[in-house]
Length: 203
Image 1: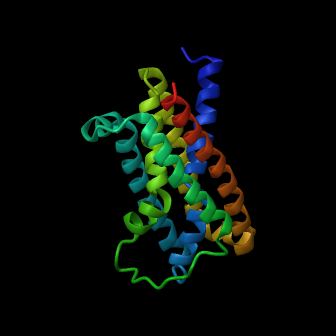
Image 2: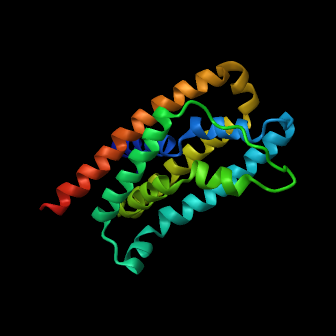
């Protein structure tokens, strides 16, 4: 049975995952890298990106504990390392002025690399998803957490699908401002990860 605690957990986890995927930075990079693409081609590419992110995040979330055991890494050590990387990512979002426009040959598939990985699922995001996957122990909460992750990816994918529309509504400056706000939220998540890891080390 789903109770109010489960619903609250789903909402909180969805919000965390959404910001971890740096959606507005991903959107600005997507627009820069697909400059010159028509709307139909952008939509097809956004679907490929979303599927790639789904698959990579699913593997990370479900098999995080196995990865830790193979390399002999403790969850708290990983929290501190991930928090540090996440803070660097957050600082980059806050201080960046705009996504650099690059020239790409669209005959090459850019859905997986670089757009899905590392633009959306970067090192810090990978670490955070691994930590969350290991922290959630019961099958029920893991299922809810996975649903929250998939919901967040869906919203990010929808943003990319509607990229041309959002570009007209928000303009480039609007996207940059929202990216900076995302950076501030990520810095708070980074601090929480580091503090939790240090506190547990000192017990």
